[in-house]
Image 1: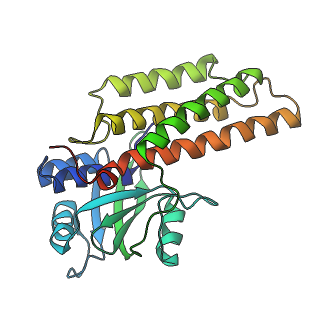
Image 2: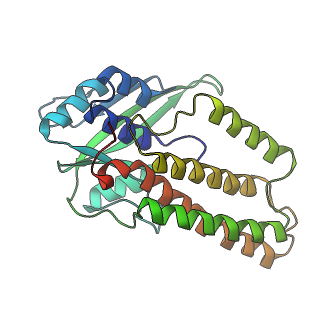
Length: 261
């Protein structure tokens, strides 16, 4: 969770574009990020893939008034509302964007080529019909903030007891990488999002870091099968809460009615 999901970038900057806070080129540049290129395939009225700028404009012309995020995993269809085909594709990608105001969703298909450290990444967003219904299991910002604080407190206590809290060179390197990213302009979300949404997303990313460090540090002091199981039981709900909070932050535009101008 240290890297913002592509669906989060598309939804956040797409919402800023719809609010008139950024230009189409600014939004497209932010969404593409370090990838080589993004295209959108399956738009009504288009015979083939088109660029992000044209695609966002076309969706706005069709009636899109906002974008929300889904971050589903097996057993947790977070942010999805159907139909089954869209849900299945989103679950395979573990992310998707759902347009608000028009019955379309976008699922990324990522292609990578090249050696490690010099990857050429291309993304094709597949446009698919979606069901216009409330998304599954998405909390409010307030609920997400409370859940994060409780989950982080409980998980820290368990992981500390099992000697797998963030410590050692792997944890220190991960924390250093997070600090560098946080200080590099603090580009979380997009212009116009309320401060609470930014705060919730940053907190979710910190919680996600704790989870990834705990997994990457091996078993630590959790030497028995029961202790290893206890660690897994401690981490799974924290991971779930962090994903719910991410979705709540990205969806603050739609849930809150508008991005602040």
